[in-house]
Length: 409
Image 1 (cartoon, rainbow, N blue to C red):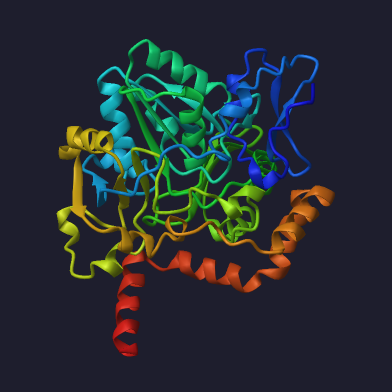
Image 2 (image 1 turned 60 degrees about the horizontal axis):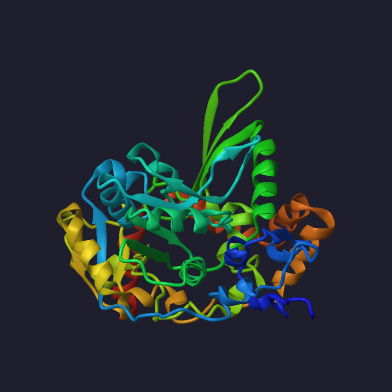
């Protein structure tokens, strides 16, 4: 019998791990390639060629998708929850409601394991652990066995909220093979994902520059409002914990992420980067909110200074979930076009650039330090721009934009 082939081109695999989760003989392992991107590898001596892995690829065979029925600008009324979220806390509000009703929440976290930060999906069953899932993670989160964990919870009748990138939600749905009334899915507006290895090498390098070891890393800190500001918590030998807040664009990792130079191959042809969504709900940043609604009074609860989410309601189930916690939100009805205008991935995948191959080849051959040197050599103007931008308060930036807009007219 011929061997099973899960994909013929790397563009056909998102690394979700559904095939690994479904294998009855544990014959599939997720292994990293030369750049750190994970792909399924079949151990042929264990494989019985049952073909189960061929049926669960949600990337090559998309599950049912829906266009948004309703679109909102949203922010949590809970100031603590809002402050700990990257944008408006839409995911956190819904997750909190599920946990309060003895449900289970799955999502991406950055726990410290064996002395290193591990981007991975985890299972959360209590409110005190919800913080682990809050905030953006600009790196691929490994699913591990959370699909099979979620299935066990669903069979036991527990309400399960599963959040992730659209391809991860697609993988879950194909793995489950049936609809569960007690499953709620949230997909994020995803630009693309760098590899875990690249992220971990960045963290190690950044820690050395700070003179310590990073124990916590936040891709989106709100010290200066909603934006791309990182915060590192680190400890040096003989010293207590310290923090470093930095404009994300001043680091090679975040800059190249924002330019779409370091993603998986499939991210540049992603079939989920469109108006048709795979989750019951879609969450993301409502970038440009004040541009779209210049007369909006922030006293009504929505402010970029504190964070605003866009919330797309794609199914009746998603609408029912929102209705159950609607009073926890500052909500304003919006429309898809206004949100998508500032979120290109609601129309099309991130654009490929030949710089991807240049940067990843440099990384493979010489490591992250060489990538950092390349960044400081070729992106000097960007670094200056980000540095100056970090010094200007968000409110002043909006005022300047308004004035410039009037001048242009």
